[in-house]
Length: 451
Image 1 (cartoon, one colour):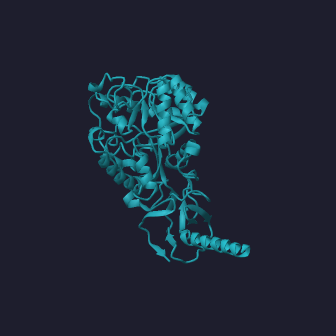
Image 2: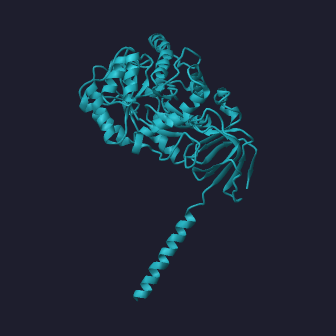
């Protein structure tokens, strides 16, 4: 009897193992032949090379031909000397809030808003942006849908709702809703998790913990006045050092960090003293602020806010504030270079659906301060380094922003050399031949051989 039971146990194990083996499909293989590589950091393209992707990782890079076994899971893409590079990363994106106007955010059905965001997510990926750091908005459901393959879109590092003081950059209430009763319900902006209001150390700590509970990979606070917000002038500093410290402590307990919306020296310096690691914007910083950022290794997540065709459309007082910020952009990047700041790049398109198609074109405007190679490094390897600050809260484990062995296979094949002509990135339909995310091909217009 003991022998029979042992036999049955072994047989059962073999059956389970066999079923598991059958349920795990073999890894796909994609071989890029004869490509010149921008690896995310170099100032020039490589000599002709071959790159093999197995599953979702780059496994071989070779000057010599790479042999693959012909099968239904193998694709060979003939690069014909085109440029192979990492997928682009936008470090200040709004996957939800870019797709609707403020009135729509505050009044439209949430199902409608989510459908618009899902549509835009696919367009974002098809512009070559394989990862984004989302810096406020209700994107947790969208991220889940993308990760599950329900809709196509980039990897998302979500902040969830931006946390703001009363009357701050994330206070979307109407004036008739103020003063609010002590037991007042959530405003529409809070109910949709677009922006939540917190005053005082205890409330800030609570709101941070809520966003972490929902799945935030980093936390965003509003440290100063904004362009798109209705009530706060640009020069207004928001939150105290103690409130920032409460947010930072709560985030660090979860192994991640706090970034802030801030333009002015006072807003930036107070946030840094509170332990914040990243400053988003910083257009009105001065030399003392740049020196402080350099001394403490603080990241500047900068945007090319200029008075050009890519500016978020504004009217009235908001237009005046926008012009004030645009005038400071040149000086901010000059100081960043002078003091050797760690600089990331993002677009910050907000409440303007017609502007999202210019995402790549906005990247090209960074050549006002940096070389094309520096700009591409910023939008790949450098931005990936910023994303890594999320540590264990990063929703995707693995190396991004580079073309190297064992890196995640987020890859673009560009028809031309973007180090010589960065405008290729501004026209993705014409010049992005292959778009791959996590080893899966979403676009391929090359001449290819499929076995």
